[in-house]
Length: 147
Image 1 (cartoon, rainbow, N blue to C red):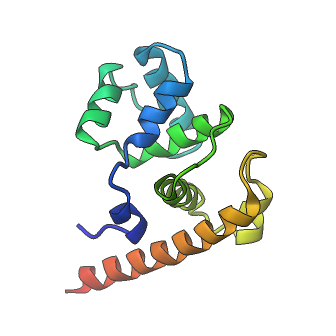
Image 2: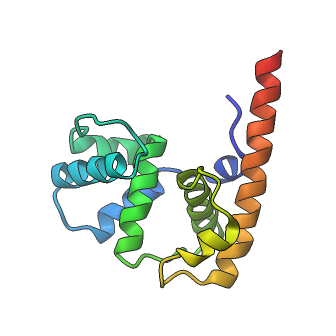
């Protein structure tokens, strides 16, 4: 499996789930329901039952959470006012932001819709890098498929 540069540099992709669990005080079951509903509403995943609440903890322990769950967790984190602090946080944020806007939104459009707490000058660098990494990932994946 080919991973994007940003995915490969992120040693803890499920950290976004752990961060959400720290910010959101609902029970694991309620949080799992909310996460799934958010993902469905935003089109990250087709309608499905929410995973059991203990699954969230399992994703953190195994460091493997599905993309739809990580995308929804980031959206929910942003609603709580979360701000990336480390380079890994920024890389994870940018990767998930790009993946959540795969409709081809332009960089100015993405910047115009940034949550208030995100510094646009910092975000633009991470978004440009993430977009380039995503394009490289897709090109390499297409090449691999031709073999």
